[in-house]
Length: 334
Image (cartoon, rainbow, N blue to C red; front, side):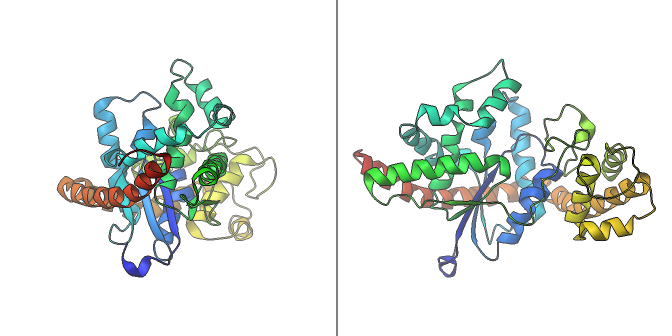
């Protein structure tokens, strides 16, 4: 966050540390975070406050937070170039979420499709946080006056809500928040489950073979790809109705940089066995340096703490400017 970076667009993004980072998280988001570091002023958060809308085990959650922090650094997030902090360490996030919840309509939140989906999945724990977490997400973004927010297609609705909240607040109190733009990075692959390719790859997939984790050993990755769902045609081509093959081709393309046409040519006359093995090998090689770097980082808890404490402090300093401005506008005595 040096002075020469002031003119760069501010990019904000966050990821939850609920379990290990998946291949889908990496190809769809984190790899783009790494690429954006040189052209933008990047602020990244480990969104652990969001994680507790679903019940967590204390010791497991603590381990997941450190594992996720080390994993994302291992992917190439440079803490000298980017701000990468732990959300719960920066109290302004929870505070602004409450203030903004008073400027968000109940009807807006009740229309959020993710609330409906998650309520169905966790019917025994439909808590208020599950309902209001898009306001916390809006606060995460607006605290840093972000210009751009890289999102997956499933988060577009939340970005629209963030913009609506910002515009409503600005309409009442003047130009307090920058209204952010959501964008879907061009090279962000949408990775689907290897066992149900109509659904996004998710760490909560009930079938363990559906999801590849960043830290899976090579033999586990290969086994998962060999078991991936395809079809009976036994022809590697990208076409409607071939969800399983399309997903494997998209993963192979994201990792190798080849076009769909090049992939079709490479595997012309070959069966799915050869293709699945090739995809597995390509993914193993892509993830190998990340796993090696992660192993180094996780052994040095002192260094990890030094990195996030420093980032937490800077994030608090930046976000307090926005929070204090908001409180002043509303009428609190500072």
